[in-house]
Length: 490
Ligand code: CMC
Image (tube, rainbow, N blue to C red):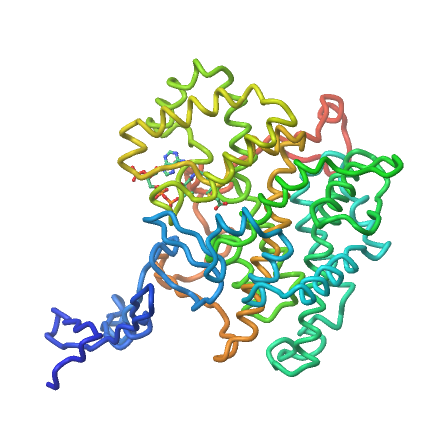
């Protein structure tokens, strides 16, 4: 056998002594092997009933994508061991200090910091695309008064797509965004301006509809985050201007939240985008994924956790519950960072500035006690659990946003990261490949259907063994006692 090349693995199948050479691809920061190479390693499976044999390739198992790279990307670099985060090569600390959210958005999407004229044009395009079709207002008004704003935002992004048939590959042809000619790229850029421009408008509308306020558009001349605050808060006062400290703090938080490479929601957007769905539907899936308490919903969960703990004196007992796995310490831990999340340092500095204007929230004492105790506790130290970006919930609370609005404040800037990745995927030199993972089937073998009358009653041993009987909250005592045709047996 020819000697294996240096950048390769030699894999020996100990069942039959066969060897396989699997290439290792080396880039500046990573080395990887193609999972599909393992398909060449054959397993012979036998049907237990017929004895028939069939050859199948080895599958690579990676529950929760712990070690699977699904894209090659130019956008964001994270070194989780050293606590480094860079957008297109620029350290997050420099961007948070010197850039603004729209400039950072330009950088993330198009790869370079804009010149003054490029920035001005982009700024105008985004701000000019911030209004919505008047009919969208009906969508907001169709929600219950207490609907979670993430439910609203998710639905409205999906609905928005129906206003732009020219942006829908199902209607215009599947290569709508993958052609790379001028018209196709212009069409893509227009959707990018629209999505970034409308994100804060839709978020502000989700806020106002629950307050019973009219929707408004801001006057020209405000920054992206200034216009967002105006759209949320202005009640018709003349020359209303958001507080500049809060406006800048929100802008910094938007920069920190703009992208974070293959997090759950970006992966979801790319998963949806890989079937060539329209960008509005893809962004809606990102919102749905971000909403969960293990991801963008964690900033809301942090405050609910702090409220439930209450006094700093209760922190030790709470941490004992966490260690007994009865509770989760929201705002701690990260799949990639095994040291302090670099964003959390910037958040602490930003919090200091905000608290000077808003005053300190009483929960800050509880949060600090939790922070200090967890960082010294062996349970958290051993597992490399450090504060993550979601402690920014304390800033949002100090700024007076409702708790359930916190994930929205994460989603609005993350629209930019989702779009940057979606665009990169659409313009990939290798074309778009649909994301279709495999599974390891461990269910029943083939069995014959039995008509319902011939089936045995089966005892349900565990609640998860089948559907459970549920409480019907819609039934009042009176309707339970009433008689009517077709009365439910439950
Ligand atoms: N509290 C208590 N224990 C934890 C926590 C936590 N917050 N996070 C991880 N652990 C433990 C976990 O139980 C496990 O212990 P063991 O090895 O003994 O079973 C160990 O640490 C490793 O954790 P994991 O669950 O395997 O890690 P993961 O990479 O699958 O999950 C995470 C990462 C972020 C989902 C998790 O740390 C977590 O649930 N954190 C709390 C929720 C949160 O703050 N999410 C926001 C993440 S950052 C921003 C974002 O993505 O939106």
